[in-house]
Length: 524
Image 1 (cartoon, rainbow, N blue to C red):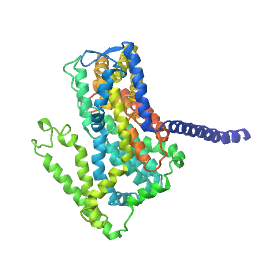
Image 2: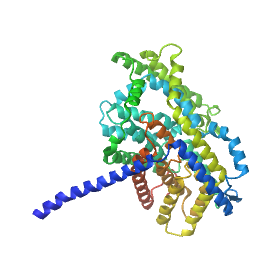
Image 3: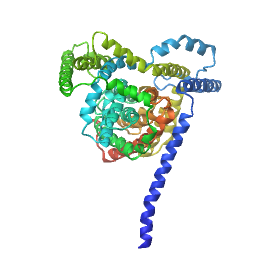
């Protein structure tokens, strides 16, 4: 009896010690990551590493065959006269055309008005007043998972909202930012809503499959059943990991007092009585309905300029320019609410709020300049193409059973994704090799596409090569000046790894049972 009692007391102690070791490991990850140079300088250092690597690979005359064109592709040396000429002359264009730059600036113009009007704070306070801190985690996670249809705009909209939601229930707003970020970035491909990215993935898969079977057609809805279930499974997984692991380190995410006070002042300024606030919220809701009705009515005609070729809705002007419509949306609701509550006064109020919003992301714009130059250099060298083709060739040579091959494929693509962080770019590179290869082995292209979604998503949130990763760091630094790569990785790493395992297990169960991935898309 005495022995049993001792063992029962030792078990929790062992579990506690194991948990503390895990937390100490994350602390070391954070310290190591934050010991790195400022991200601005880190990307210039990476430019130097890429330049030297490209020189060595070019000297070795390493070449691969481009699967889509059949042309030989070699690594171009960045330490050459051509590289210097092209990269210097294109530096301004690389920065101005850098993908997230325009989206962030444009959407922020509208978000700033809505935020400074006090609308976000009022909505969060009223919607979250009866919720527990644990329920808020699940709500933000679900919002992030389901918000990926907003494309890059999701980060600009939902990361600040995550901070507002967590602050409203007395938790760290920085943790709210991280939960929103990892939900969009690592689980965004698990989305029941059809987004432009789904159409792009399907079209690339169709072209790749038709290299060996001209009759194969992959549709944007071919993963719908699987991604719908995955969305809720992954949102629950994120909430569980945050509550069981990340919450124990939440004290590491304490905002700088002056920055937190400034952030709070932006959303809680002039006092608004309850009756005025309720009336303003109701009329703002009416404005939302009118705006939505206007968009729907404008898109009803098949010949609408907001639709795409042949009257398409997914691949349409509306979806491609979603950031424009979001900017107008947030500008509208912010202006209506701000006017009704007196938070925005006169004709100067709206442009002043816009200017304040742009000023708040100035450090992010500085970082984007360095990131844009690195991306341009990396693309110019063709290293990404060589890595993708060599990786696909390795998988082809394995000749392993289906589930083993799937596991190796997921690991390989997840590792490639640490370097080639654009999901569409990596898919375009490896799909012409992977899809035909697995199709010849009897694997439906829709299944290959689902495997790619799993591998491509989870590691997005732990690589500094990702522009959205650096965007999140920029937001964290608006509340804590010393927040760095280590801060973010130490919190996203447990979520990403556990999500990857859970998602793989869900897929294997799906595959073994034989549930269709989508309408008319068998898993095997």
